Length: 482
Ligand SMILES: Cc1cc2nc3c(=O)[nH]c(=O)nc-3n(C[C@H](O)[C@H](O)[C@H](O)COP(=O)(O)OP(=O)(O)OC[C@H]3O[C@@H](n4cnc5c(N)ncnc54)[C@H](O)[C@@H]3O)c2cc1C
Image (cartoon, rainbow, N blue to C red; front, top):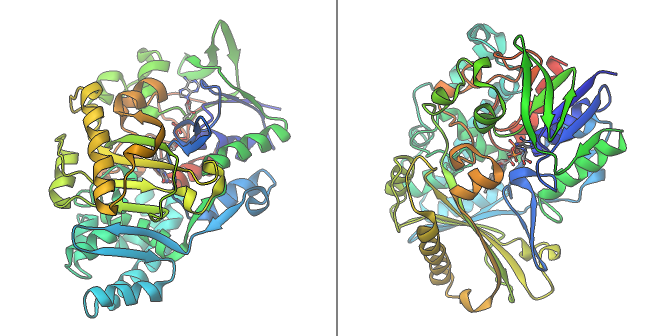
């Protein structure tokens, strides 16, 4: 059996392990003592958290990953389909978005007469768009000639080249709140809706049209279950085993340096953050487009500032809630032009509302995410982090008229410097290379890496892109090559 090494047990590396474990001798090397990477589980005393992802959508991709290894997703994980998707709080308007489209129609109509009809028009258009674009994202896109593929040509009318997500939504209705409620999802890619290409209006459709899921115990459980199943099939997961170097000879990836060992493999798959790994694991002499100085000139997503709180009380905020800045447009522009503001936007995850495994009875675990510029924007995070934590907590307290501060039992911050130092994420840009058209499809680092033979890429830094479904898809794409 051919031997395959996977560098990193993040969602991308584990999904690759699932896809390949039946046909290869799989070895996954993970630098940390646990699996999951940016999606891992974090515990503070008796309080548990998902470090990163909390929104799970487009399940068919993950189902396929499990199927490839011979398992059924629903049998392995306790999945909960959410009836209430999320609550969106603007300065003067609150939208409770439901999984039931009729409820949403009523809600939009109550806010503005006939807006519900525009919502339905949008929903129907996105369904067609996903049917056209989905198949493209499921295949490799190695070069410019792939634009001539029949599936790509068929999708052209749905792409609206040159339009941003925001601009495209304006064609349905110009109401700002309506647009923000169906475009804040551009931030899943670490982008602003004013910049993100309009194809990404499929993201909110994945939630509204196909549903949003929670996994009992947290999305981190997907990683633990994949790790267990890979080992059950004979794959090996080497924890606390950082790869120091990918050894390349005559343009071919041959071996890995792990501690004082040099281990040879037939194929090597990289899941570690693409830019960070190129800059740190590969001798620069073997690279052309992706040498350190060129990586520095590429465009990257925003970062996130995180506050995880263990509280001796439960709160009835929605499971997923977004508190929008008073001037959200100015906030998005600042975010993507490396400016900081006090008028922040905050995402709050309150899983204890539906899942008792996160905290002791009567207590809760709260996850607060503030999108912030990445490390290209110079900031002293040791002082600014303290201020931002206070601003975010105060914002939640004021919006909900509650006291959080006096109920904090455990607390932890992750700022952009931690993402880089501890999670090995280049510039702390947690959603990887930005998803502008100049860095997508054949212009994104390729799944079959074109600068080094026998090296393959999975994860958010390669095709099709960042976000769990596309990350899982990058692993499925390996089947075209291996
Ligand atoms: C705060 C936050 C919230 C997010 N929310 C969502 C969400 O709700 N929904 C969604 O779909 N996506 C979300 N994402 C985006 C994305 O799904 C996650 O970031 C995801 O974990 C990325 O997976 P990955 O496999 O590409 O990389 P990673 O999770 O970073 O995995 C890479 C792995 O490689 C390991 N590694 C790196 N270098 C080495 C080395 N030299 N040797 C050995 N191991 C190494 C790392 O330790 C890590 O385990 C979120 C991201 C963040 C940060």
